[in-house]
Length: 517
Image 1: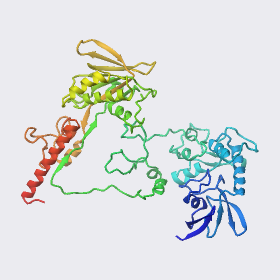
Image 2: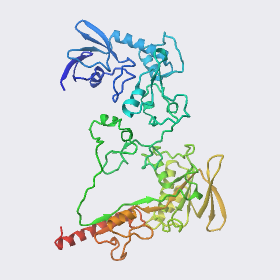
Image 3: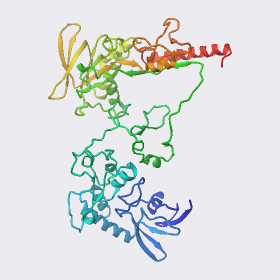
């Protein structure tokens, strides 16, 4: 595409043919005010705030820069006396139409417009008829659920079912695009559709925060690149949008990319698929999902993380208050023949660490840990527990809580339990309850079938000889380490991984000695 040369505010500019004056000015850092322009939408020229003065010889005229294309030899002035006078008039007209719109009030202050000389028809109106909402709905979302109706002074933005929100209108998908581009806040999603927008919950933040359809799963993801959620992306729902594709300077977005199956011939396999979390929603006695201030240990972990949904502020879900009396309940779903009979191994020390974190976040916080048996089996783990008691205001109660109720006055959970040492039934009121849910091996029967290995009764990888070959599976050349092998913490998993790597090296060396590849 050919380039043209023009002058903007005394500076020579080269721009591609078809570029608008507004785009050319922005490319050299000149900001022309506008309320109706959006880079992803067709220019409309509705607000006319982007008016500039153009010159050809001695002749000059005012044009709307967001729709007027650059021309060879054109001279443009974005802040001439004529332009400023015209903008002030436009701001007065907008103040008359939407006097409470903050963006217009800010523009009026910037240009020295104290008040409007025109009649204010509706003091509560915020819409300036910029058209951004209608264009994004039609051009990008592809549904046209909102548009202009009426003419002249009666012209307004409306939906086909305005005023009849009880009507089930399926065109609007409640994406919120119209509200997100509205410069004055005139568009409220609840006024547009009876449907409730459904946020996309972040899996990494345990559903405590939302994410976009294009996202990086978590900060340490490998590979550390963004992924596109096909099920939530508007383009795959309507065939339109693609705004992200235009905004991506690296041109990295490919909507035509498909999943691939890559076959690799290997000499050995190490299975290290990690752990998953047992679904405790069926354990009604703990009230998880019903009592607001009952959360899981992983949710607590994200709430105290600096990169979490609250930026490290420990806020309880019901009212956002800082809890200073926290209860931790161990073995939720584990060591229970109705659910998972085995001990999850890491929960006792995890709860101790979380109690310390709570105290460090807010000194004085009291943590009470309800446990069946204290299993601090690692090196100096018992010292860690003793330190939590002494320095971090942690109390340990040997008990198996049987029921959690809620105090209706303050939303505090009330724990009913039998104290093992005395046999007494007691209650304990906390501001926040943290449940240590059982952990499960992250492997399915389908994957085990593909690999040709066996799993034990608890879903862990079956090890035929735990004494002589503790990292082998029931199939030669496939090894396992980490939580998929058996319940264990990070140091043990790292040690196992080193052992599995050694066994893999032995297997490959054996194959080579036999003439294999």
